[in-house]
Image (cartoon, rainbow, N blue to C red):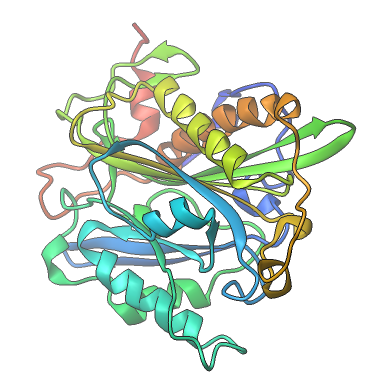
Length: 342
């Protein structure tokens, strides 16, 4: 039976969580999945993260990407680095689906009211390689199936574990998946929410709250992870990049090998209304509010905590799975914890 880490007595960090302990605790953020489990060969899907309910191409959000090891594909990365903003939802899927994901995001964005004359879109698409459990060469998910993930995105609680872009992923020789967590942080008398969503598909030596566990050794040193951070705190792209970089601290706490073959990507964005890049603001001399450097450390620490918990949750809520290139069912996270820590 799948159990959230907190129901297993695993409480990571000291900041309080949001009501759902998910990225959707950040107001306006929506998440949608399409999950494909068919026969013995298909174990894949897509996950969409939509930063706000408006027209993202017209009202962009400040964002930044932090890459610890760039063995992967992250579409839209150069424009994020250049402009410090994103103008589409973020779509996650498998390695061979990135091109189809770009098309799905373009199609979805062109269909939004007010975009009838649009001729340029910077689609944001990330990936990990799910070929151990999924026949990755089969062309799934399709453009239409990834559109389904975008179209079904909603606020509130969403499923975690072996769903969406995490359907076929593997972490530490265990079933990986989609996981999320959130934190509430008081900064200068105001409470801000920070949420994280991860697609875990990497390896190393599993640590849970600092304790080393005897997870199965499947030589899973390589692999990848994508970590998406959302906050309602007013941050500029420079401090969003610093925030995204702290996600790698949470990744390291889980025992990640950080190997040559691992793609480790963290993208952070702010939903605060006053830092949104509206059409009017982009065409004028504009001052954006931003938390000063001396105020952001609590958010940095919360990012480490929430990322660590999101990763552990991605495994704890994933059912064991047999797939395309795995000879036996992958063990569950609970099975790994039943082994004595070293």
